[in-house]
Image 1 (cartoon, rainbow, N blue to C red):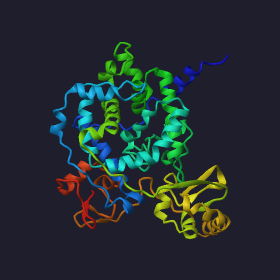
Image 2: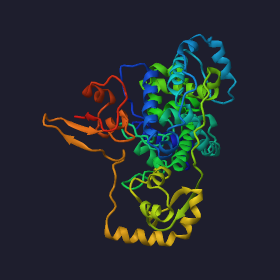
Image 3: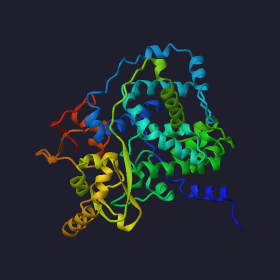
Image 4: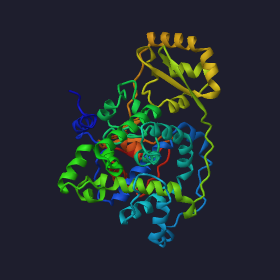
Length: 420
C-alpha cells in the first residue's frame, strides 16, 4: 500500500524537529535588536569577501544619514499601502512588531544597501529560477538576507552555514554533502536548491507560507507544538506567543526586509551599486585538482578562487570521487580548459608528495599568544571584525568587548585582543 506523500514529508520533518535550521540564541534585547545584530555580524563577515575587499573599499558610502525620527513620523496607513502594493501570495501582515523590524532594518541596512543591492543582482536570478522551479514564491529570495546577509561563508555559533544557514542534519536530509573537504551548505546553487525543496515541503505540511517560514527557522516540530499549545490555531500570529523567541521575530523580520528592499527610496536612501567584476562560468571536473595549481595556470588569485568556490573547505576539489565542478571568472575558462590535463597531473603529483591541510570550518586562524598573566591574546589581522575574532575563539562578541573594555565595535590591524 502506498503511503500518502504529505504523510511521508510530515514524518521525515518531525524526525528532524529537534534540529532547527537556526540557533536559538537568547539575549536580553528586543527581538528586532537580536535579528538586526545577527544581520550586522553576517554582513561584517561578508566584507572579507575577495571582491568586496578589492573593489568596494572606496565605493561604499551612504548618500544620506537615515533618520529614525523621520520614519517614526510616517503614518501606519502609508506603510500598509506600500506593503499591499507588493504582489505576493505570502501575507505581508503589518502590526507593531513588523513596524519595529522595519525601523531596525532601515537603520542597519541604510549604510549597507550598496552591497546588498549588488549581491541581489548577482544571486537573485539563481534564487528566482530555483524557487519558481519548486513552486515557492519568489519573495522568499529575501529570506537569505535575514538568514545570512547573503554571505555564503556565514556560520552561526551552533554551526548553521551558508546563504540559507542549513544545520548539518537538515542539509544531509536535502542531499547537501558535508565533510572535512566539501561543505555544500556554502555552495550557492546546491544550497538554494535545498532551501527551495525544504520550503516547498514545509508548505506542503502546513499549507500556510508564514507557518512554513517559521518552521524553516525553528523546525516543524516546534511549530506543531505551538499549534497544539494554542488550541489548534493555524495562523502565525495566533501561535506567536508559543513559539521560540527568535522565531517570533523571524517572520516579522522577513516582512520588514521585503518592505525595505522594495521601498528604500521612499526613505531617502540612494545607494550606489558596487561594481563587482563577477562574470563566471562553471566547469565540470573529472579529476582531483588543487586550487593553488589552478591559480598557477590561470593567473586567478587564490583568494578569488576560494571566494568563487566557498563549498571547498580545503584547497582540494575531490572530483575523482563524485560530481564536482569549479567556478571561474568567465575570462579564464578557456585558459583553464586548455590546461586542464596539466592542472590535474600537477595536482596529482602535489597530492602524492604532501597531504592536503584541512582548514577549520570558520576560516583561517590568526595568531594567538599566551600572556604571563595566564590570559591569551589575539593579534588583529586585515579583514577581522569583532564577530570573526569572537567566533574563532568560541566566545560571544559581548564577552570579547567586556574582556577588552571596548565601548564600540571598531578594531584596528595589529591591535591585541584578550580572548581568554
